[in-house]
Amino acid sequence: RADLPLAGKKVVVTAGGTIERIDPVRYITNDSSGKMGFAVAKAAQELGADVTLVVARTQVAPPLNINTVYVESAMEMYEAVANVWQDTDILVKAAAVADYRPKSPAQHKIKKSGDALQLELVKNIDILQTLGQQKTSQFLIGFAAETENLEQYAMDKLQRKNCDLLIANDVTQAGAGFGIDTNIVNIYDAQGLVKSLPMMTKEEMGLHIMELAAERLAGVGK
Ligand code: PMT
Image (tube, rainbow, N blue to C red; front, side, top):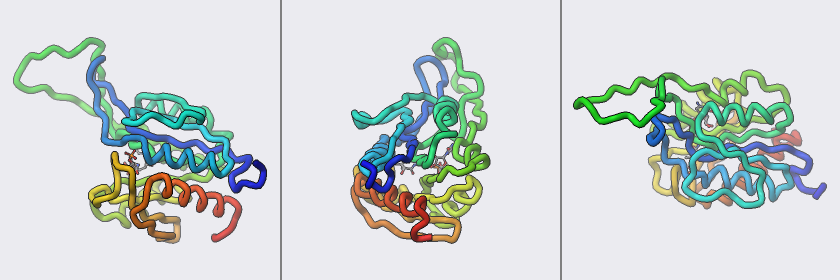
């Protein structure tokens, strides 16, 4: 519907935790359930956007009626987002992406041998930072999952990754972070704290985030 705040906008949302293979049956991942990203994607759709979800490993099923691209690793997530990047109006990076991956994933299942096994990790591409550095008109929303120094680390990520908004959650707080249905966040822009959202469902939070993005995109509240 043309009267909705995100009508005609293309929104890309990443959700879940990437999988970085060690061998064909083992991998490194994290606790992301996908819930936060799914809530943002649903909110964007409710507000009229044309939404694409890029989904790594999740613990819950993605919403049924949203165009979804399934990926495994950070590299695959990067490629999926890069494919639609030129036409993207808003990118929301709610996914928890592995910073490192095994250097040489084994082709066959690693057999048990000595008392210790060394796994060498190499740095993954930073999807948000890479795209942030080459953004033209895209509005970039990053997330930051922190366990300490929330504001300092969030502002550092916002600047380094060239985000327009950064959603920071202290994942040690009860009611916030991975796996559960609620979250507690601070939202920052380049000037600093925009607003603090108290504990609420991820669905409600998704709407707050996308409403703010719509306002910013329309040039309101700057
Ligand atoms: O999925 P849920 O269970 O609902 O949990 C929600 C959540 C805790 C995963 C979510 O609220 C959240 O904080 N997501 C971001 C998690 C994360 O990876 O944060 P980070 O601080 O490591 O990364 C900062 C930002 O850079 C993120 O937007 C991330 O997507 C992005 N990033 C990170 C590393 C990388 N190699 N590429 C990236 O694009």
